[in-house]
Image (cartoon, rainbow, N blue to C red; front, side, top):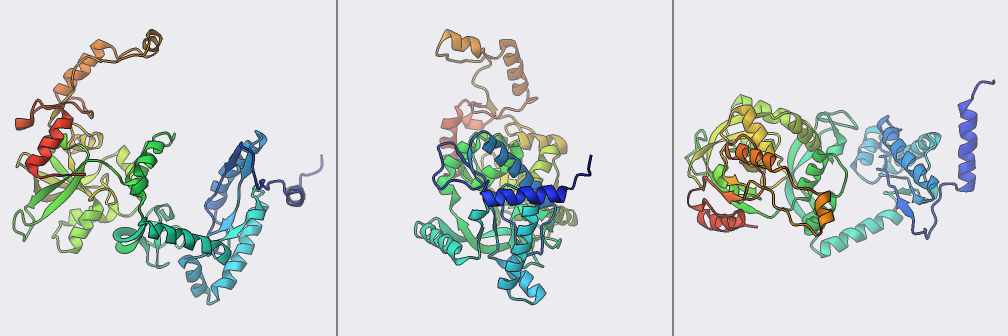
Length: 443
């Protein structure tokens, strides 16, 4: 058998695919159609890195699989060419960005074609082409006119070398994926799209996705809409500051559990802002904040799911429902991008707070009890009942006793206990009455 020469075979078939437009999608596809879009590479470097074919191979496999099933697949390729990375590359090389971008596109296109991916090259685009970006500008203007684009202050990933903001996906182990510089967290004024206007639809469909839970949790935080209450906690024990002079507003979806809030957790982002405006935090707190912010939010959530970490801030907050002083902790399982960047921690009724309290030996106080020990379920038919039998009664009672004893977490709504004058109320009614009592703002 002659030696297999992959170059001859690959070049031959790649030419056949090109001549016959094998992977071109129809202008008016059939009902059974799919659109598979990769993240376009930046032509701000001379070629691909190993991460590009890793992702492109996965989508190519799926595209070919669908085509073999008779699906009309639109699988285009293009170039994310219109931004600071291309400008910085031109500055670095001392050449005009139009020239360097065109050269880099030619080389990267050659590399991608040599890998044999099934892209529809007839639909190749560059975001630096006026034919393309006139429509992105038009879309932005429509969003702006409808109040769906606005400016606000927010923490961002900043690369001091590239002089640009990075998406979380562009930060790898705390470094810029392009230049390997250490990424900084900065507070900057920038443009936002009002995603919360469509939050209900987005959250509903997110639950249908078969994705890892940490990734879905990050998406929920990113979508950023919840129904609940905003509550003010005054602070004490801040070095050099008068007690109750400063406060933290927190957002909670479970105001009915506030009597069980035995500690507060602030995000590393919020802690850093406090430090920047003069908080005399301990060296331990500063070290923790620096290390926690050296990474992406998704990595933090995944890490927090495995192991809880945190540090006592050395200050106290006053629970407005109990008037008790509770410790304030800094922990990376709370994100600066969600709510106000601070939470009231109710370990008896929240899984993450439970794990944190268990690790650091913090008080766990149950304040909501199940409505009943036994399961109650209404069925449409006898057959439906046979298909979905209720939980074993003995097991249900055992769970109920563990919850009552504080040995098991209970995250559902129920009847309030250990909640002063609100004891005995159901959760929904309690929320309204507690909000009036402590001056919480329902949202």
